[in-house]
Image (cartoon, rainbow over all chains, first blue to last red; front, side):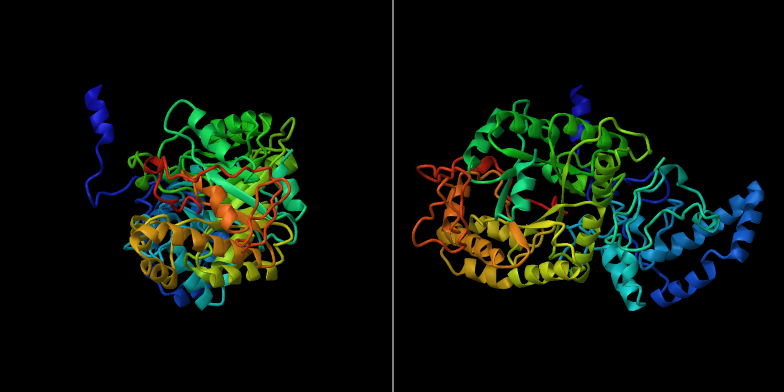
Length: 192
Length: 346
């Protein structure tokens, strides 16, 4: 018993990784996007759901192997570019292409109040807050209004899924509101 | 019935404070501290494991304070420790026991507390939690869509730190919480009145001030040691502007507390003049004995007749809460209290 208590009280060694709040992917640590805001918003034009990529997505989803390969490719590219953790419900198009799941509190509606005066993350002071970065990037592309949308809670069963396939199939449609919700109370909608 | 809601709706200058539950299985000491606030503040936040340190739950603390009849509680709820199932369940429990005033915040990361290895939950964020409570109340449904019978009555609160980057986004973030359902909002420590004024002005431009009452966070720097700590930049979410630091460094170390109280009284007086500010939230948990003195300095009377001590009426606030000034404002018990509030007010 004493031993257990000692174990519980032991503080983590300096520099050791903190536990991730999510259930898949690397830890929730702020990641500085490696793709410029301009290119990211250009990419949005290509990846936005349209009839072509919806058809392509449906094709990919017909084969388990194709789906697996496609998901692996998405993971590899987005992990490198955005520190993607594969929550499966990508918010990047409305967060200045700075991933909110890199926030140690996984906040999807903006920064917490603990951001340092220099814009540093409260939990990892040497990393910039993902929302400080996201706001700058969105504003630089004239998209700051995107950050006014209300983000709904994510579905934790989707970790590890391809968010592109979900996006193209319209399974993500209710992730956020269309505007700031101030004109009339936005419905929360059903969260399973 | 939330008297806090009624007072804010009536447009009366409102005072809230904080009470942190004890580390122990008795609420007696907390009720003793609540007694010191009786008649001086309109409602008191019962903190939710503040700074990620385990304390008696805010839920039980709020019920104890409510049942004592001393003061009206505001139950804080953070997103750190409970998922959407537990949060909704606790919201129903609060509703069943007549806890109407709720305050939602993200919560400090476990890293800063006494169980740094704990799993950070953050299943929903503070905006989503506010939205959830409004859904329970207004739609009479859970997030699953299942009907509630009956739906709870709530008065919904949120918090904001107008001083943390990105400062240009802070009013918008607050407006999101208002869209989600927040009806009152407490802020992090206000030392920088111009920045705070700009934030309130922006809220006015967004049209949310008539839907959400703003309570400015005010705290006292009580000692040179506390000044060093708070000015170090190591306290999440707290920023003290250079002129305030210079002013406090300009007095002898033993006078820092008195000067700090003077500054706090001046802040209360200043924010009272800002159109749209509904009151102040006193961040003086652990120092409840100082509260009457601070309010007196700021010109806030606790007496039913609203008597303001002569010469000190800097804020021009009238009382009416039936408060009695303790014979002496002592500093006893200071050692056990947390040094400062951290970013709980996320």
